[in-house]
Length: 215
Ligand SMILES: Nc1ncnc2c1ncn2[C@@H]1O[C@H](COP(=O)(O)OP(=O)(O)OP(=O)(O)O)[C@@H](O)[C@H]1O
Image 1 (tube, helix red, strand yellow):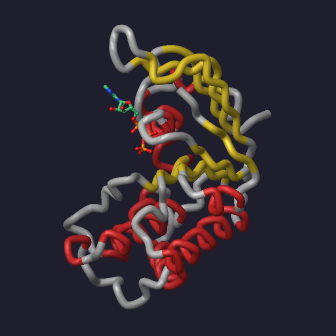
Image 2 (cartoon, rainbow, N blue to C red):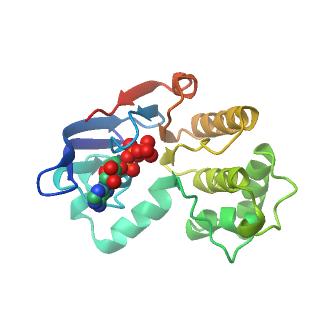
């Protein structure tokens, strides 16, 4: 059984315009999928639908065979917090928390002991080249640094699925390669499935499979 399956998914952006329709996509546990397609075709919208952050106009979304539309509000909340890890294009770090605190949040929500949460967060940040930035606040970080903090936060609680929207888009080529390696390795090591939006064919080639979204 697929870990995540979208069936006949449709998203309408106006009365006459469908962004996509009859879209079927499935993801196995631990599988790594590159989501590609032209700018504006609907990749970010699709990621939001897959994560249950937005509602489709048609179709259904099954997590381990269960339609997420029929989960209670509480079950949906638990699902978003423990099943998914996100790297949004706009990062969405919490401004009043420093770097290490931002990364620890998903672990604490998932119920990990404080020390374990701290240890995991520090290890990931160090791997991503941010060992000297634990105490800094998001406002003083560059876009590329914020992006790596967001990446660590998406991975740290070892969710079932990481959804990453151009997670290396703000990084120089060397740092982008480092971040991509950390992302892929961490997901493989913990059997976490990954859907990554990327415009880079080189990055997409590192994953198991590609899905091209077309209008
Ligand atoms: N709720 C909405 N109402 C109207 N238009 C919308 C809505 N949501 C998305 N769109 C439009 O749908 C299109 C797809 O947006 P989306 O951000 O998903 O594309 P994308 O493929 O991720 O693009 P990029 O590669 O540039 O990030 C855009 O033209 C956007 O303006």
